[in-house]
Length: 283
Length: 283
Image (tube, rainbow over all chains, first blue to last red; front, top):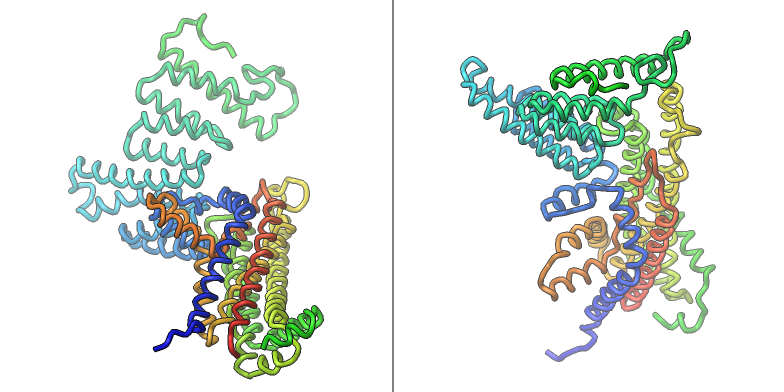
């Protein structure tokens, strides 16, 4: 066979096209990179730390686009159906898929972790014969296993919602109610209280957990700090305005109740700590 | 076939004529009407899917859902219409007749590209318009039902940003149409062009995963190869500025301009390469 240079023409054309596209891509980097950084900053699912994350988050986010919200919603319904059947492995897989497809809503993360940490231990204990039959030690082991999985879900959620008080509070609740690790719960309630938007409950829970583990002085100091920041409507201790004949608004009534309740708590702690009257807090 | 190029100067009027004919041919096709009907039907049906929305706010859900329909059907329309309109000229031999006259191949290719892009533009305008209408309708209803939740001044939905997102999707479809034309310029069949066109669409949406996953390679030649290949394909994720729209943020105008410049450059380069490749082709 004789060599015909014309046969190489498609190859030459192809190579030239690829080279031109690569050169264009490089030349457009100054336009692409800032835009890509802006897109990624608002879309946590596009920040891929591992290949596993890339294959999970990346592919679904990249391909489903706007439909991922709907796909996740439908899968959530399926997860609820599986939950009603008490099918723990299938429910857990389905919930994982939901948060993989759409990691944006907190609803999915919070409720997934609650199902895993609170409901599944009950299913497993019943499946093994019930609370009367299964030894306490085994029951505790099951609760601890499920709580750990629930906490892992919330830990992953924090990578997408790093400032969510709700996530920290749910983690703390699991430690408080399921693993009975009050020290861990105290740390997490404090973290929740420090996030923007938290209503105050997590702060009070932090003090409660400290009390539970006998750290009364820390609980007392924390409550003093919180009390100082509470709004104090006219007439309540610590308020700069005296009581008037004007009726309080609904919000002011709530604030007054909260302040009074916290002051009573402070007094109780002073009693527990045996603080002399001259060292008692003066609002 | 290159003789006319040398005899007559490049004509924008001829280009516009080819683009106009392509546009008319495309809107008469069942494909366009079908895609438009499906997309409009899907967006309009969002009301029926509201009950399945768990994760995000209702307006966000409608927006995500509508954008999903726009991206999905817009991509399908772009790839199939471009391939079909190009090969209808080749298979019916009208391209042969046309190019025997003093018509540049550049005019032919860019005429086709502009015609398809205009059709996709009509599609994007209709779907985005419908989406805006639906969001405005629901926003009005929600504001009337829960006035206490909309305490800020003005309407909460940034309609201008939705228009920008729609325009950016249209620009992305322009890049996709140009890429499909490049494939069509050397391909022998419509089917091959459509399949490869869809592969390109997927690659362009997912190329960032390869870049992220292989960013830490130790082998230099492999790193250069991956970097080169990642620059051959445009990054379609940069067009996804929808996540920028939120209660406390909007689309950054500078980022949108950068993305627009990125798209226009790619359209021009891919169109030019399609012309180059088409010139090598025997019709």
